[in-house]
Structure formats: C-alpha cells, structure tokens
Image 1 (cartoon, rainbow, N blue to C red):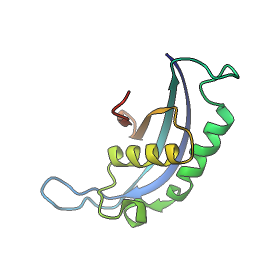
Image 2 (cartoon, rainbow, N blue to C red):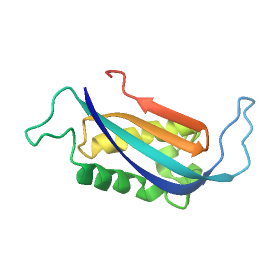
Image 3 (spheres, helix red, strand yellow):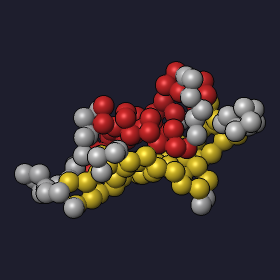
Length: 122
C-alpha cells in the first residue's frame, strides 16, 4: 500500500458539549490537520495523489474554519464540534472535492491530543 499525506493548520474556537449536557467555555486551538491518502497501486503518473492538488483541496476545505467559532458554522449545526467530529467533517469535504483516495484525517487540537476519522472500508 502506498500512502502520502499533506497537512495544514488553522486557528479556531469551539465549545464542546460535556457528558453532563453542559457546554465548555469557548476556547481556541491551533488545529493541525493531516490528510492521508492511499492506493494499492500508483496511478499512470506514478502517484497516489498529486501533492499540489491534495494541498489545494485541503486548504479549500479548511478555509471556512480559519478564525471561526466552529459552533457557529452551519456545517456543525446540531453537532458538538469535538476533534473527532471535525476530522469526520473534513474527511467528507475532501472526498466531496474529488479526492477519493483519502483514507484518514487526523486532527491535533493541542499537543498530545490527536483524533482521527478513517473510512470503514480502510
């Protein structure tokens, strides 16, 4: 299996619904996003995915998140924007932009705190 990854960062705030139903105080993170792509065999150009295209799409899908309160974004309506949920939303947005070799999105919201979403078929 061949894999490549691209990464980016964005600053955003959020507040998560806690197990008791209360909301955390609004707080911010410097979020790090890693998108991992994989293929069993390389394409006709010898690539899993073109790095430039993967970077362009990743930047496009995180653009709305930069300097935003994630709780106020429509895409998180009815959701608690945990790192796990952010990973899933970004995964779905990258795939919707045509990069179907995506296999995992990893989110780091603070040093040592990593969450990821990986599609079931992987």
